[in-house]
Every structure is written in C-alpha cells, then in structure tokens.
Amino acid sequence: MVSENGDHIEGASEDALFEMISALDDTDNTFIVIEPDADDPTWFVSVAALEEGGYEIVRRDSARHEHKVHTETDVSRIALDLIVWLAGRNVPGRPARRGTDS
Image (cartoon, rainbow, N blue to C red; front, side, top):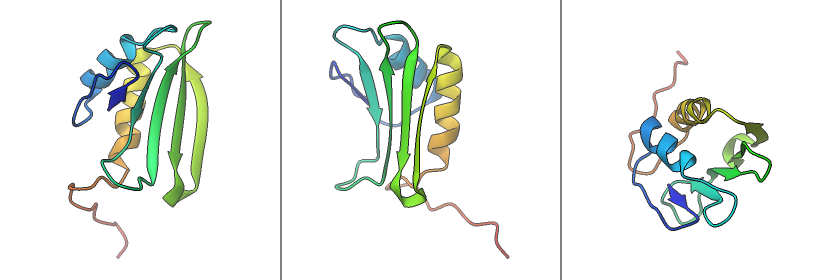
C-alpha cells in the first residue's frame, strides 16, 4: 500500500487500511493505492478523499473484467470490504487459492 504522501506498508491488514484511510485529507494526502508488487499488475484498488467528505473507492481487476467505482463515508466498512476483496486477488508470493471444482 502506498499513499500520496509516500507512506508505504507491506501487506495489507484491516487495521493498516483503517489507519491509512483515516489519514487521508483533501489537500496533500488525497489517496492510497494498493496493488501487487509486479511489473504489470492485473489489479489495483485506490481510495481517494473527496472534498465534500467521504471517499471514492475504485477497484479494477483486468483478469476478471471488473471495474467498480463507488463512494463510502464509513472508514471501518471500507477497510473491511477491501480486505475481503483483496483476499480474492492473486498476489505474487502467496500460494495460489485452491478451487472448489471437483
């Protein structure tokens, strides 16, 4: 995770997301980006502070043809939703998820 002001955290956790999102403002630390450490990442998520309050969340996963944009005001909800979403992504260095197909 990287914020506009240069804060960098390896490995996303719900607490780390909450702290980084809470630290966003609408002047000099307006967004964070989460993406895998890869040359050509297939997915990313960004959270940006809105001038009128709240946050814009953008989720893109080209491998799954997913592009969603929405707004939210509850930082706890954003952090939880993102942790759940991130759990479904392919992350370099993390073992592949086993399918449930038989």
